[in-house]
Image (tube, rainbow, N blue to C red):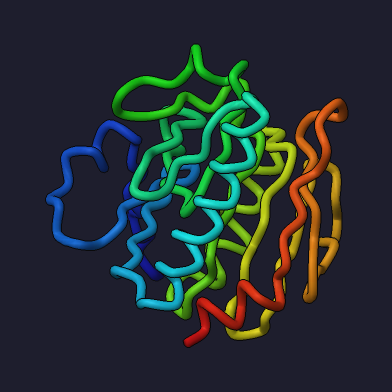
Length: 188
């Protein structure tokens, strides 16, 4: 008879004690995910999307955008570090110097997929963000030159390849993003 294998159940507090060794430690429902440091195209996408989002949010006095590594704790056993997150001013009471407590959730979470994070971004993180009612979750795939937009009740993403808009507040004009240009710049 085979023996049962014990799988560790991690907490957000436990992974915070892990060494700072250029890998990203995240925990989703107690399961540990370790991602190596990303490459240049990934970091360019993070930089450029964060700059676009932050510029839009501050111009319209709506909030701010932050980039990884910055932790969002949704539960005691679920803490992740999205590549980019957008916070509206109403989210600020749950923001500390070290992390965001995910209730209410960020207005937008963006993950740039890499070879090592593809499955986690599309399955475990998507499910976590949808269950936490993150209004929009973008999966940016530089290789496929597309953005998948997920909302809490979606069973399939809306896919954008040339351009997309984001409008977190109806009273403010939307942010228009030229994806074709973005992918041209970051894919070098």
